[in-house]
Length: 326
Image 1 (cartoon, rainbow, N blue to C red):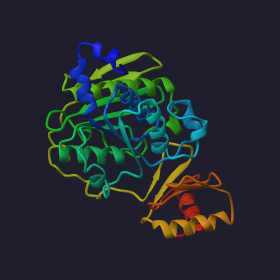
Image 2: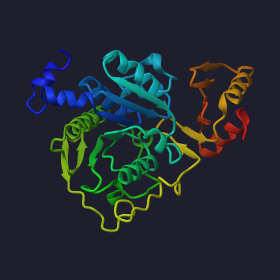
Image 3: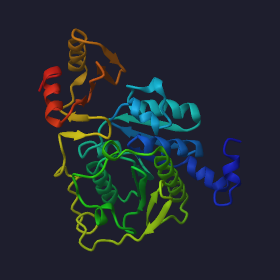
């Protein structure tokens, strides 16, 4: 009876519902877009959902990331999302990964069959990594982004549609939620469109081929024809620069309030516990099992990553060196 209202819809039916229950979707980025899209797919009965995120819940997230609440502050987003989604729908399988998706681990993480990937990330490096992997391995994905009052959605089907690198250029000065702000209405709208497109694609139904643009403040809705670039470095020349690691960074600015990610080699349990015990002596730590938070300034993961609140990259690296070591 859970899905009866959905099954009545003529484009779905019982067969469509059964197909959803056998489908697998990976959600890359569990912030405003990813958490909302994942919730809609979980409620719709998508049988297998993989949540991937490297960040933790902050107070400023709650304005738009409606899956989380105040008790989740400081928790890894993918873990908190998994816990809430399991309460919403206990009949589906939800896996989570607290990690930075990168060229070294994407093959392992996506080694199991994935029918569709949702790109809900906040940076071009990860977007282009997902794009590379999808084109090379023939896995469709749906791009989504939202900043200010504006957002975009685009369905990428390898061999049939343009890929992201056909029309998205590498850049370092794009607006972010921190610099331009973001309305919760646009993240809700974009994630709803993305989830709806996902259901269409999983059912093998006709889906949107245009780049969809929305401005929630001005009520502008546009469909933009995206053309395949005949010289595209990815889908035409098959030069997967991000998948091979040719273009990757050690430090990254996250879509939060002055938060930087530092990546190093995995620490292992012994070294991780040594770091934990060292920090206990000089301040307050919160142990989440998968990671520890120190004085709300730095969150350290067992895989060697750290999220650090700092004014700039130089300060973040300095704090990491002082508190953790090189």
